[in-house]
Amino acid sequence: MSDEEREEVELDLSSPEVVTKYKLAAETVNKALQLVLSECRPNAKIVDICEKGDSYIRTQTSNMYKNVKKKVEKGIAFPTCLSVNNTVCHFSPLASDETVLEEGDVLKIDMGCHIDGFIAVVAHTHVLQQGKVTGRVADVLAAANTAAEVALRLVRPGKKNKDVTEAIQKVAAAYDCKVVEGVLSHQLKQFVIDGNKVVLSVPNADTRVDEAEFEENEVYAVDIVASSGDGKPKMLDEKQTTVYKRAVDQNYHLKMKASRFIFSEISQKFPIMPFTARALEEKRARFGLVECVNHDLLQPYPVLHEKPGTIVAHIKFTVLLMPNGSDRVTSHPVQELEPTKTIDDPEIKAWLALGTKTKKKGGGKKKKGKKDKVEGAAEEPMDVTNGGAQE
Image 1 (cartoon, rainbow, N blue to C red):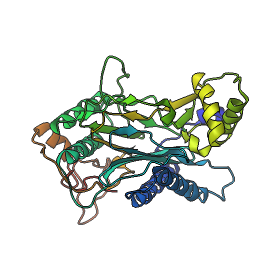
Image 2 (image 1 turned 90 degrees about the horizontal axis):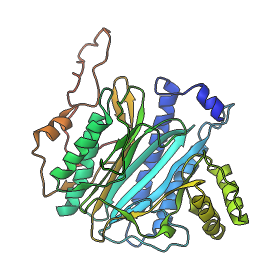
Image 3 (image 1 turned 30 degrees about the vertical axis):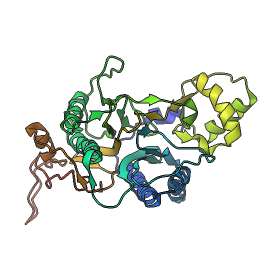
Image 4 (image 1 turned 135 degrees about the vertical axis):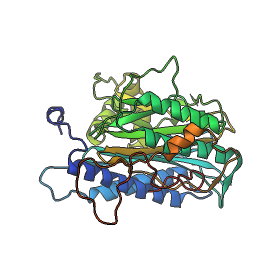
Protein backbone atom coordinates (compact mmCIF):
# COMPACT_ATOMS: atom_id res chain seq x y z
CA MET A 1 0.00 0.00 0.00
CA SER A 2 1.39 3.41 -0.96
CA ASP A 3 1.62 6.35 1.46
CA GLU A 4 -0.92 8.23 -0.65
CA GLU A 5 -3.46 5.43 -0.38
CA ARG A 6 -2.89 5.13 3.36
CA GLU A 7 -3.37 8.85 3.91
CA GLU A 8 -6.54 8.76 1.85
CA VAL A 9 -8.45 6.82 4.48
CA GLU A 10 -7.22 6.03 7.98
CA LEU A 11 -8.99 2.87 9.05
CA ASP A 12 -9.87 2.34 12.71
CA LEU A 13 -12.05 0.16 14.94
CA SER A 14 -15.24 1.76 13.60
CA SER A 15 -14.77 -0.68 10.70
CA PRO A 16 -15.80 -4.29 11.57
CA GLU A 17 -13.24 -5.57 9.05
CA VAL A 18 -10.45 -3.78 10.93
CA VAL A 19 -11.60 -5.29 14.25
CA THR A 20 -11.59 -8.74 12.62
CA LYS A 21 -8.01 -8.28 11.39
CA TYR A 22 -6.76 -7.09 14.79
CA LYS A 23 -8.41 -10.08 16.46
CA LEU A 24 -7.03 -12.50 13.88
CA ALA A 25 -3.52 -11.12 14.42
CA ALA A 26 -4.07 -11.39 18.19
CA GLU A 27 -5.29 -14.97 18.00
CA THR A 28 -2.24 -15.89 15.91
CA VAL A 29 0.30 -14.29 18.23
CA ASN A 30 -1.40 -15.76 21.33
CA LYS A 31 -1.06 -19.25 19.80
CA ALA A 32 2.54 -18.51 18.79
CA LEU A 33 3.28 -17.53 22.40
CA GLN A 34 1.78 -20.83 23.62
CA LEU A 35 4.01 -22.70 21.18
CA VAL A 36 7.11 -20.80 22.31
CA LEU A 37 6.33 -21.50 25.96
CA SER A 38 5.92 -25.22 25.20
CA GLU A 39 9.43 -25.22 23.70
CA CYS A 40 11.02 -23.57 26.76
CA ARG A 41 12.85 -26.27 28.73
CA PRO A 42 16.33 -26.62 30.24
CA ASN A 43 19.12 -26.96 27.63
CA ALA A 44 16.91 -25.73 24.77
CA LYS A 45 18.73 -23.26 22.48
CA ILE A 46 17.20 -19.78 22.57
CA VAL A 47 17.72 -19.23 18.84
CA ASP A 48 15.77 -22.41 18.01
CA ILE A 49 12.84 -21.29 20.17
CA CYS A 50 12.81 -17.80 18.61
CA GLU A 51 12.87 -19.29 15.12
CA LYS A 52 9.93 -21.59 15.93
CA GLY A 53 7.90 -18.58 17.10
CA ASP A 54 8.67 -16.63 13.93
CA SER A 55 8.07 -19.64 11.70
CA TYR A 56 4.65 -20.27 13.26
CA ILE A 57 3.51 -16.70 12.56
CA ARG A 58 4.86 -16.79 8.99
CA THR A 59 3.16 -20.12 8.26
CA GLN A 60 -0.20 -19.27 9.82
CA THR A 61 -0.50 -15.84 8.20
CA SER A 62 0.57 -17.12 4.77
CA ASN A 63 -2.73 -19.06 4.62
CA MET A 64 -4.90 -16.03 5.43
CA TYR A 65 -6.58 -13.78 2.84
CA LYS A 66 -5.16 -15.83 -0.02
CA ASN A 67 -8.19 -15.59 -2.28
CA VAL A 68 -8.77 -11.84 -2.25
CA LYS A 69 -8.36 -9.55 -5.26
CA LYS A 70 -6.12 -7.02 -3.54
CA LYS A 71 -2.92 -8.40 -1.96
CA VAL A 72 -3.05 -8.32 1.84
CA GLU A 73 0.33 -7.95 3.55
CA LYS A 74 0.68 -10.02 6.70
CA GLY A 75 3.23 -11.74 8.91
CA ILE A 76 5.63 -10.89 11.72
CA ALA A 77 5.09 -7.45 13.29
CA PHE A 78 7.88 -7.96 15.85
CA PRO A 79 10.34 -10.88 15.76
CA THR A 80 10.30 -13.37 18.64
CA CYS A 81 12.64 -12.27 21.44
CA LEU A 82 13.53 -14.39 24.47
CA SER A 83 15.36 -12.38 27.14
CA VAL A 84 16.56 -14.25 30.23
CA ASN A 85 17.00 -13.16 33.87
CA ASN A 86 18.63 -9.69 34.09
CA THR A 87 18.43 -9.21 30.30
CA VAL A 88 15.52 -6.81 29.88
CA CYS A 89 14.52 -7.04 26.22
CA HIS A 90 15.17 -7.60 22.50
CA PHE A 91 17.37 -10.74 22.74
CA SER A 92 16.74 -12.60 19.47
CA PRO A 93 20.09 -14.20 18.64
CA LEU A 94 21.63 -15.15 15.30
CA ALA A 95 21.72 -18.77 14.11
CA SER A 96 25.32 -19.18 15.30
CA ASP A 97 24.43 -18.36 18.94
CA GLU A 98 24.70 -21.31 21.33
CA THR A 99 22.96 -19.83 24.42
CA VAL A 100 20.64 -22.32 26.17
CA LEU A 101 17.99 -22.09 28.88
CA GLU A 102 18.55 -23.33 32.42
CA GLU A 103 16.22 -24.49 35.19
CA GLY A 104 14.98 -21.50 37.21
CA ASP A 105 15.56 -18.92 34.44
CA VAL A 106 13.13 -15.98 34.33
CA LEU A 107 12.07 -15.78 30.66
CA LYS A 108 10.64 -12.73 28.89
CA ILE A 109 8.98 -13.62 25.57
CA ASP A 110 8.10 -10.71 23.25
CA MET A 111 6.52 -11.05 19.77
CA GLY A 112 4.04 -9.55 17.33
CA CYS A 113 1.87 -10.38 14.31
CA HIS A 114 0.03 -8.23 11.76
CA ILE A 115 -2.74 -8.77 9.25
CA ASP A 116 -2.95 -6.03 6.60
CA GLY A 117 -0.83 -3.83 8.86
CA PHE A 118 -3.14 -4.21 11.88
CA ILE A 119 -0.76 -5.19 14.64
CA ALA A 120 -1.15 -7.34 17.76
CA VAL A 121 1.82 -7.62 20.12
CA VAL A 122 2.32 -9.57 23.34
CA ALA A 123 5.01 -10.08 25.97
CA HIS A 124 4.86 -12.60 28.80
CA THR A 125 7.15 -13.60 31.68
CA HIS A 126 7.56 -17.23 32.73
CA VAL A 127 9.82 -18.84 35.33
CA LEU A 128 11.32 -22.11 34.10
CA GLN A 129 10.24 -24.26 37.04
CA GLN A 130 7.44 -26.52 38.21
CA GLY A 131 4.91 -25.34 40.79
CA LYS A 132 4.19 -22.03 42.44
CA VAL A 133 6.56 -19.07 42.01
CA THR A 134 7.46 -17.61 45.42
CA GLY A 135 9.59 -14.96 47.11
CA ARG A 136 11.22 -12.02 45.39
CA VAL A 137 10.70 -13.45 41.89
CA ALA A 138 6.97 -13.63 42.61
CA ASP A 139 7.05 -10.00 43.80
CA VAL A 140 8.48 -8.80 40.49
CA LEU A 141 6.07 -10.88 38.38
CA ALA A 142 3.12 -9.73 40.50
CA ALA A 143 4.27 -6.09 40.15
CA ALA A 144 4.32 -6.32 36.34
CA ASN A 145 1.07 -8.26 36.13
CA THR A 146 -0.82 -6.04 38.59
CA ALA A 147 0.46 -2.91 36.83
CA ALA A 148 -0.80 -4.37 33.54
CA GLU A 149 -4.24 -5.05 35.05
CA VAL A 150 -4.42 -1.48 36.41
CA ALA A 151 -3.25 -0.04 33.07
CA LEU A 152 -5.94 -2.04 31.25
CA ARG A 153 -8.57 -0.31 33.41
CA LEU A 154 -7.08 3.17 32.94
CA VAL A 155 -6.37 3.05 29.20
CA ARG A 156 -9.93 4.08 28.39
CA PRO A 157 -11.59 7.06 26.69
CA GLY A 158 -11.43 10.22 28.81
CA LYS A 159 -8.35 9.15 30.80
CA LYS A 160 -4.91 10.63 30.12
CA ASN A 161 -1.55 8.97 29.52
CA LYS A 162 -0.12 10.54 32.70
CA ASP A 163 -2.85 8.75 34.75
CA VAL A 164 -1.42 5.42 33.61
CA THR A 165 2.20 6.48 34.22
CA GLU A 166 1.42 7.47 37.82
CA ALA A 167 -0.61 4.32 38.50
CA ILE A 168 2.00 1.81 37.33
CA GLN A 169 4.64 3.61 39.43
CA LYS A 170 2.43 3.23 42.49
CA VAL A 171 1.78 -0.47 41.84
CA ALA A 172 5.48 -1.26 41.39
CA ALA A 173 6.33 0.57 44.63
CA ALA A 174 3.72 -1.53 46.49
CA TYR A 175 5.79 -4.62 45.59
CA ASP A 176 9.08 -2.82 46.41
CA CYS A 177 9.99 -2.90 42.70
CA LYS A 178 10.92 -0.32 40.07
CA VAL A 179 9.33 0.27 36.68
CA VAL A 180 12.10 0.09 34.09
CA GLU A 181 12.99 3.40 32.45
CA GLY A 182 12.76 4.01 28.71
CA VAL A 183 9.78 1.67 28.13
CA LEU A 184 6.99 3.30 26.11
CA SER A 185 3.44 2.12 25.44
CA HIS A 186 2.49 3.23 21.92
CA GLN A 187 -0.72 3.75 20.06
CA LEU A 188 -0.97 1.25 17.18
CA LYS A 189 -2.27 2.22 13.73
CA GLN A 190 -2.30 0.44 10.39
CA PHE A 191 1.37 -0.32 9.54
CA VAL A 192 2.49 1.85 12.51
CA ILE A 193 3.91 -0.02 15.53
CA ASP A 194 5.05 3.15 17.33
CA GLY A 195 2.29 5.74 16.98
CA ASN A 196 2.56 9.32 18.28
CA LYS A 197 0.32 8.87 21.32
CA VAL A 198 2.56 7.42 24.02
CA VAL A 199 2.41 6.34 27.67
CA LEU A 200 5.69 6.87 29.46
CA SER A 201 6.63 4.27 32.08
CA VAL A 202 8.97 6.49 34.07
CA PRO A 203 8.93 10.29 33.81
CA ASN A 204 12.39 11.85 33.91
CA ALA A 205 14.31 14.85 32.61
CA ASP A 206 15.62 12.98 29.54
CA THR A 207 12.32 11.55 28.33
CA ARG A 208 9.30 13.76 27.85
CA VAL A 209 6.09 12.98 25.98
CA ASP A 210 3.10 15.12 25.08
CA GLU A 211 0.05 14.82 27.29
CA ALA A 212 -2.62 12.83 25.47
CA GLU A 213 -6.14 11.60 26.12
CA PHE A 214 -7.31 8.14 25.11
CA GLU A 215 -10.19 8.05 22.63
CA GLU A 216 -12.73 5.51 21.46
CA ASN A 217 -11.67 3.33 18.48
CA GLU A 218 -7.95 3.64 19.29
CA VAL A 219 -5.59 0.68 19.79
CA TYR A 220 -2.65 0.56 22.21
CA ALA A 221 0.27 -1.72 22.96
CA VAL A 222 0.57 -1.42 26.74
CA ASP A 223 4.15 -2.26 27.70
CA ILE A 224 5.30 -2.71 31.32
CA VAL A 225 8.66 -3.92 32.63
CA ALA A 226 9.23 -4.30 36.40
CA SER A 227 12.58 -4.88 38.09
CA SER A 228 14.03 -5.76 41.49
CA GLY A 229 16.98 -3.49 40.61
CA ASP A 230 17.29 0.23 39.92
CA GLY A 231 15.24 0.12 36.70
CA LYS A 232 18.01 1.76 34.64
CA PRO A 233 19.08 -0.82 32.05
CA LYS A 234 22.16 -0.43 29.86
CA MET A 235 23.41 -1.79 26.56
CA LEU A 236 26.52 -3.89 27.27
CA ASP A 237 27.45 -5.08 23.77
CA GLU A 238 26.33 -3.47 20.52
CA LYS A 239 26.98 -6.79 18.72
CA GLN A 240 24.04 -8.37 20.59
CA THR A 241 21.61 -6.11 18.71
CA THR A 242 19.82 -8.07 15.99
CA VAL A 243 16.38 -6.41 15.79
CA TYR A 244 15.97 -3.36 13.56
CA LYS A 245 13.30 -1.30 11.84
CA ARG A 246 13.61 0.57 8.56
CA ALA A 247 13.57 4.35 9.13
CA VAL A 248 11.30 5.18 6.21
CA ASP A 249 11.91 8.94 6.36
CA GLN A 250 15.71 8.65 6.05
CA ASN A 251 17.83 8.50 2.88
CA TYR A 252 21.57 8.03 2.34
CA HIS A 253 23.69 6.69 -0.51
CA LEU A 254 25.53 3.74 1.05
CA LYS A 255 29.22 3.38 0.12
CA MET A 256 29.83 -0.35 0.78
CA LYS A 257 28.56 -3.00 -1.62
CA ALA A 258 27.59 -5.31 1.30
CA SER A 259 25.55 -2.47 2.86
CA ARG A 260 23.72 -1.74 -0.40
CA PHE A 261 22.93 -5.43 -0.87
CA ILE A 262 21.59 -5.84 2.68
CA PHE A 263 19.62 -2.60 2.56
CA SER A 264 18.02 -3.62 -0.73
CA GLU A 265 17.01 -6.98 0.81
CA ILE A 266 15.59 -5.22 3.89
CA SER A 267 13.62 -2.74 1.76
CA GLN A 268 12.05 -5.62 -0.18
CA LYS A 269 11.36 -8.03 2.68
CA PHE A 270 10.86 -5.72 5.69
CA PRO A 271 9.90 -2.26 4.40
CA ILE A 272 7.95 -1.19 7.52
CA MET A 273 7.88 -3.72 10.38
CA PRO A 274 10.77 -4.58 12.73
CA PHE A 275 12.80 -7.63 11.70
CA THR A 276 15.66 -9.77 12.98
CA ALA A 277 19.06 -9.94 11.29
CA ARG A 278 18.66 -13.72 11.64
CA ALA A 279 16.36 -13.51 8.59
CA LEU A 280 19.28 -12.17 6.51
CA GLU A 281 22.46 -13.89 5.32
CA GLU A 282 24.57 -13.72 8.49
CA LYS A 283 28.11 -12.84 7.33
CA ARG A 284 26.93 -10.23 4.86
CA ALA A 285 24.49 -8.79 7.41
CA ARG A 286 27.24 -8.30 10.03
CA PHE A 287 29.13 -5.95 7.70
CA GLY A 288 26.22 -4.29 5.94
CA LEU A 289 24.04 -3.43 8.91
CA VAL A 290 26.72 -1.29 10.59
CA GLU A 291 26.78 1.34 7.83
CA CYS A 292 22.97 1.34 7.60
CA VAL A 293 22.67 2.02 11.35
CA ASN A 294 25.47 4.62 11.36
CA HIS A 295 23.57 6.66 8.77
CA ASP A 296 20.18 6.28 10.50
CA LEU A 297 18.62 4.14 7.76
CA LEU A 298 17.77 1.54 10.40
CA GLN A 299 16.48 2.02 13.93
CA PRO A 300 18.14 -0.57 16.23
CA TYR A 301 16.38 -2.22 19.17
CA PRO A 302 19.33 -2.72 21.52
CA VAL A 303 19.57 -5.62 23.96
CA LEU A 304 19.42 -4.00 27.42
CA HIS A 305 20.56 -5.44 30.75
CA GLU A 306 20.02 -4.74 34.43
CA LYS A 307 22.83 -5.66 36.87
CA PRO A 308 23.52 -9.41 37.30
CA GLY A 309 21.21 -11.00 39.87
CA THR A 310 18.38 -8.56 39.12
CA ILE A 311 14.95 -10.06 38.45
CA VAL A 312 13.07 -8.53 35.51
CA ALA A 313 9.47 -9.20 34.40
CA HIS A 314 7.82 -7.99 31.18
CA ILE A 315 4.10 -7.88 30.36
CA LYS A 316 2.81 -6.38 27.11
CA PHE A 317 -0.69 -6.56 25.68
CA THR A 318 -2.77 -5.11 22.88
CA VAL A 319 -6.02 -3.39 23.84
CA LEU A 320 -8.82 -2.22 21.54
CA LEU A 321 -10.80 0.75 22.88
CA MET A 322 -14.20 -0.40 21.64
CA PRO A 323 -17.50 1.50 22.14
CA ASN A 324 -18.52 -1.07 24.79
CA GLY A 325 -15.23 -0.92 26.69
CA SER A 326 -11.60 -2.03 26.59
CA ASP A 327 -10.92 -5.36 24.87
CA ARG A 328 -7.55 -6.92 25.78
CA VAL A 329 -6.88 -9.21 22.83
CA THR A 330 -3.39 -10.54 23.64
CA SER A 331 -2.38 -12.26 26.87
CA HIS A 332 -1.35 -15.50 28.50
CA PRO A 333 -2.25 -16.77 32.00
CA VAL A 334 0.42 -15.97 34.56
CA GLN A 335 1.90 -18.76 36.70
CA GLU A 336 0.57 -19.14 40.23
CA LEU A 337 2.41 -16.60 42.36
CA GLU A 338 3.02 -16.26 46.10
CA PRO A 339 4.60 -12.82 46.53
CA THR A 340 6.00 -11.58 49.82
CA LYS A 341 3.99 -8.34 49.49
CA THR A 342 0.24 -7.80 49.40
CA ILE A 343 -1.76 -4.89 47.97
CA ASP A 344 -3.18 -2.85 50.84
CA ASP A 345 -3.38 0.53 49.10
CA PRO A 346 -7.08 1.48 48.71
CA GLU A 347 -6.44 3.39 45.47
CA ILE A 348 -4.81 0.37 43.78
CA LYS A 349 -7.66 -1.85 45.04
CA ALA A 350 -10.17 0.61 43.58
CA TRP A 351 -8.40 0.55 40.19
CA LEU A 352 -8.42 -3.26 40.15
CA ALA A 353 -12.14 -3.25 40.97
CA LEU A 354 -12.95 -1.20 37.87
CA GLY A 355 -14.59 -3.07 35.02
CA THR A 356 -13.19 -3.10 31.51
CA LYS A 357 -16.61 -3.00 29.84
CA THR A 358 -18.98 -0.04 29.83
CA LYS A 359 -22.76 0.08 29.89
CA LYS A 360 -24.12 0.20 26.36
CA LYS A 361 -25.57 3.49 25.28
CA GLY A 362 -29.08 3.84 23.87
CA GLY A 363 -32.48 2.71 25.05
CA GLY A 364 -32.71 -0.69 23.42
CA LYS A 365 -34.94 -3.33 24.95
CA LYS A 366 -33.40 -5.51 27.60
CA LYS A 367 -33.47 -9.24 27.09
CA LYS A 368 -35.24 -11.16 29.79
CA GLY A 369 -33.02 -12.58 32.46
CA LYS A 370 -30.09 -10.33 31.44
CA LYS A 371 -28.99 -7.33 33.42
CA ASP A 372 -26.95 -4.49 32.01
CA LYS A 373 -23.50 -4.18 33.52
CA VAL A 374 -23.06 -1.01 35.47
CA GLU A 375 -20.24 1.14 34.14
CA GLY A 376 -17.14 0.66 36.25
CA ALA A 377 -18.37 -2.54 37.93
CA ALA A 378 -15.93 -5.43 37.89
CA GLU A 379 -16.84 -8.47 35.84
CA GLU A 380 -15.13 -10.72 38.37
CA PRO A 381 -12.73 -10.26 41.29
CA MET A 382 -9.18 -9.69 40.10
CA ASP A 383 -6.65 -12.11 41.57
CA VAL A 384 -3.27 -11.15 40.12
CA THR A 385 -1.37 -13.79 42.08
CA ASN A 386 -3.22 -16.67 40.46
CA GLY A 387 -3.22 -16.15 36.71
CA GLY A 388 -5.02 -12.81 36.71
CA ALA A 389 -4.77 -12.11 32.97
CA GLN A 390 -6.72 -14.65 31.04
CA GLU A 391 -7.17 -14.83 27.30
